[in-house]
Image (cartoon, rainbow, N blue to C red; front, side):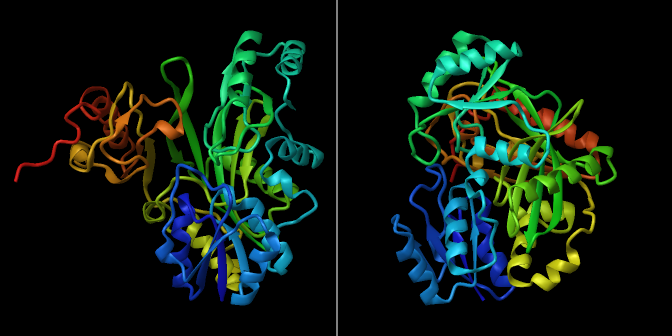
Length: 416
């Protein structure tokens, strides 16, 4: 079969190899507005198509090469993948409210209309309207963010009306991760609780939960929260059942019927509440590491659902399991420095539980202190049967960051 992957960035870059293992051929479609921070591997595809905005033209190219399935490889490809799939008649998502899978306010409305808990939200081009809304609610802080970006891009926590006005102006004056100007601002209730993400794969409306992870965040200089680390949740933990029921209902509410899903949920004292849901693979993860923990991974399951739906049907609904302990640690630069070379990360690679790492910024250039996903230089996996050893290595990693990791000599090479 032939599968078109729209914007094979982030975890989407692993899809071609997984699909080839199932005998599928891949065609790449590059949208008009991919994530400006990410790249893809054109050599992984037999055909590369640049979508120039003319949907009929792109549809004709895909029909001519015999595409049988269209999937989003990254957030930027969600809307185009849906439109192409609907036009080609390939297995896709529901099209009653397709904008709800990208536009965060429309997402809240769709989930709310399904009778599920959501954060109080409003969207406006006017800072004063948001100020009035927040003042009437009298619940601080208030979260302001762009309508359709990704990661923690311009997610700002406001503790006063003055901060709302400043954040609103900042967001409207900026572009998102896809180089598009922000036309309005989303304001939301600040949710209190434990934050999780649930990665799923669906085929013809049948959903499978591949993995559930819990986020941990920390505040950096200026009080802004950033991702610190995340770890898989044991399948027998009490939260798993509650989260599973809620997330599967969210997938149905958003009509995510085919493909991957990445759903972020806050488990509050009143139950689960949606943070947001992406109709695509989860973000920066290394499948070959994750599969050592779970026995499989979301990319592998997505490829199976696309190329071998009958095999996926047998898997769907079976509980996941953990073979070992795993921690994904975001690299955090505490002050301006440089991105180390491979040799500069030798102390990290020598940690007893080190499993692998990925750099999201090239070695060498000046590195500002970490304030969001875009300014994190990468991430490290720590794996062991011993949680105490993982914790010790995590603490050592943070010590290295505070002392030598991003210093001026971080790019020195070995002699000879």
